Image 1: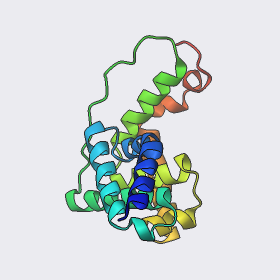
Image 2: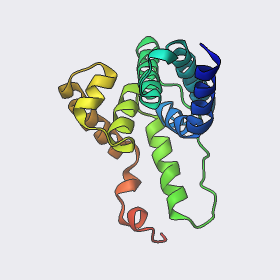
Image 3: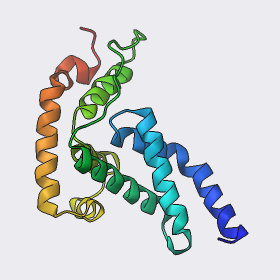
Length: 169
């Protein structure tokens, strides 16, 4: 890699790392250490192919999705961080929702999290999700359906009107 390409890579990492780290955090179920490892691994793979990468962010994201699903296939269990037991009593509805959602996402499999993050956080169509994860559109649809059903079981409070409207209980 020549100096100009190295500078371009460093600029990309500097500018896009915060957003990529948030995505890694979601994909790993809220484990900050696993998220750092996931992003670092994806950037390592990206730098090795930097010259041929036309869309760097898309490439890094795809590597992250595939690495996380691959890790899940190898382990067949989800490593998860323990979220705080109680939300900080700051009166904000959004913080409470984020904690509930983070807890529920952490209990899904890596594939389920990846599909939900791609579909709803990244707002990608099913066909693109299937391409990124290397599976069929039908698999994306069924995984989405099962994942949402599992979230409803894991976090029924998200369906309660006071959680949605932000009213006090």
